[in-house]
Image (cartoon, rainbow, N blue to C red; front, side, top):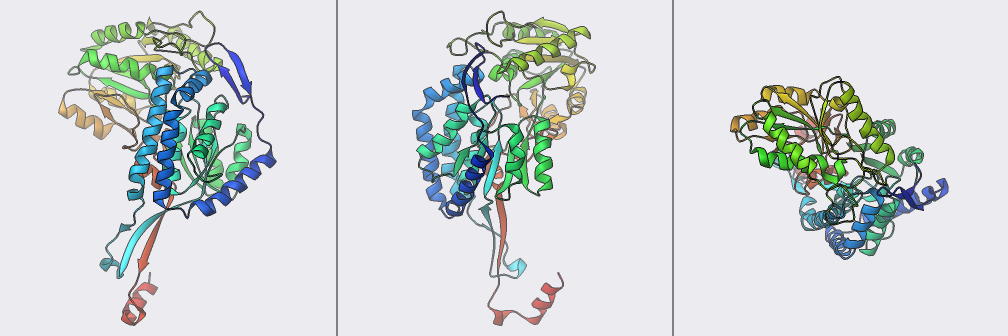
Length: 474
């Protein structure tokens, strides 16, 4: 894929960028490594101040940045504005709480024969972030805010279709006053990533993206013995039981499936509905999907914009056509919109079976696959048969069902009577082929920290021979 801004609402190529040469990449890595040598010595208070300044810059740039994201990948302007606000919130969250997260954590010194014993979390160094286009600001910020607060330095390899958003992120941290080269954007193709990751000065990597990309990065990082955090695909189950508020569940189901034009890893994609309420829920779901306004993402009234790429729309069309050919029913939608750009109708497909690609693969577009189940056990069993385990949803007023869902669903996140989303205050990540590691909260910060054990013993005169012999036996 060329590094270019292509407006998905029109198909027009607006700007193309040349990838950095290998020499230019080498020079930027060298600058990042030198920056870390200085930046790691700054105080948490200093770093918190720069994060607050970045939040202020983002607030001031909110309108232009939102319009840029909408232009580059087609999300509605309202969604883009919300994304900017969410990023500013994350910056302020780590500015407010990061210093406490980085305080030494005391241990029981007496139990280990020490005068003092504690754990300190220290930054690892230069971290490579490989990020996707669907939330071009937020995905990068989920890494950047905690990593920079901890004292790490970032190199961002963003998706090739959001280059201007990627360059803005580097500008944002520079305008906020962070030291030079603490956060740099690398406009490079995917073929150049391996060399960056293998460089000894790059100590770790984080990736949000496809399973294939995750496997590629994990393979290289494993060979080089470097830490990785991977947030990969998702095909989240959305389970509706008879006790649920069906109208509310259907309303949230529409948002959960069509948010970001259906292009979200944590979007609900597989809907398992109890047979007792399946007919009514399907009717409500279809009505609300059909009522969504599809159109120019810059228009205030638009609820669903175009898919980000032409190939992405073609993939969605293939999934729906395959399902129909194998017996599925399209209740609403099911075709591209007759206008320039890469638009596709919000779609509800029922009578879905395991033979269909839509059952087992991630559909990255506004297409919901609905299956009727006899009970919660069947819903959980079918949900868990999938290779992914990112987020999950249950709609039920029954406390026993809620507890069974939380206990038995194989996912990194379980939401009851609400839509799966991300918050700085909660860990974010998945299990199985949805990846490993966590982002956000202190858990996400510690992913790229050295949890260093500190043991300080008593003066030598106070140490007995028995202590020395015991230590030698370990």
